[in-house]
Amino acid sequence: MTLKFDIQPSPNATSDKDRAAKLVDPGFGRVFTDHMAIVRYSQGKGWHSARIEARANFPLDPAGAVLHYAQEIFEGLKAYKRDDGGVNLFRPDANARRFHDSAERMAMAPLPEDLFIDAVEQLVRIDRAWIPGGEGSLYLRPFMIASEVFLGVKPSAEYIFSVIASPVGSYFKGGPAPVSIWVSENYTRAAIGGTGAVKCGGNYAASLRAQAEAIERGCDQVVFLDAVERRYIEELGGMNVFFAFDDGSLLTPPLGTILPGITRDSIIALAKDAGTRVREEPYTIQQWRADAASGKLKEAFACGTAAVISPIGKVCSASGDFQISGGVAGPVAMGLRKKLVDIQYGRTNDPHNWIRNVA
Image (tube, rainbow, N blue to C red; front, side, top):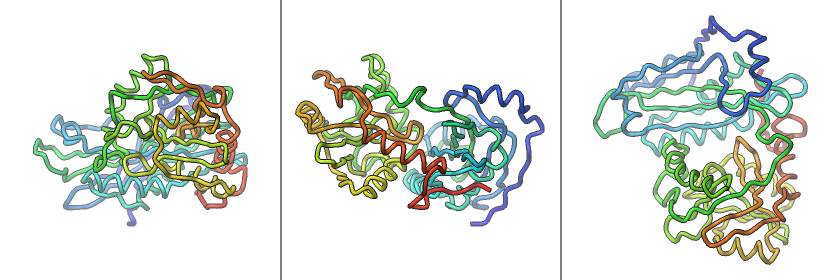
């Protein structure tokens, strides 16, 4: 789909001095760039009115469909500054496909993949000065909400698609530190036929109580079990999970009720490139505990866009705690992380053509 963006630069853009001050320590998701992308949809016109404009609040009617029936989806990806000053996007086509699939599942108007990518690139171009150097990046948040004004239970006839951007520093200061996770036995994340494979806000809202429970137990993150037998590992609150064994193989839970993570898919590809056997198989919490105790399990790690790879050092549950790999980051997780990050920043070759340069 060809839809030309109307570029309207902000008349009150942040000064170079103020932007530099904000980029010293931007944290994650609290500092925002000057602009946003907006495209609107209505049943009569289809996708229309594509603009890049000053970041601002949306006018939203109290009867807006998203507020009552939660038709909402989003994505997360990053723009990286190369050493030569250029800018890389990592697999935006995969994000565009997943966004399209999420819209289909949530009965929303699917956004053409080329329009998704164009919106992201246009925003990166106008706000590229906001991309931090070093291990920082520009986190991009494409999202879509139902905007029709009505109180009937049906798919909305109108939608707003937008992209906003937030400069972020390195997720880990001083290098990736192993995280502790709490096994949730009271809450589940998704069931077969549900929205577990969709990147929608409701999935994350439903995970927050379990995450709070993990924090109350002194852990960093929560890991969910399957909704039927309550024993198979699914994923963390916002990340997929991998297990590395003494025979050199990797295991990750199969897709279906979990999010098809783009970082997850990239790790599988890089591991296979290196000759590693990767199994996408069910894995129980009981087996995890036994394999950690016997030494068969060498490492466990979580992965996602924000942190890339987080080693798991300790697993806590009502049945008792256990450590993995002595509670330290292991060579498998750190080796895969380095390979992936080097590709993202353009420091090494890109064998799968994952990188898209933003001119």
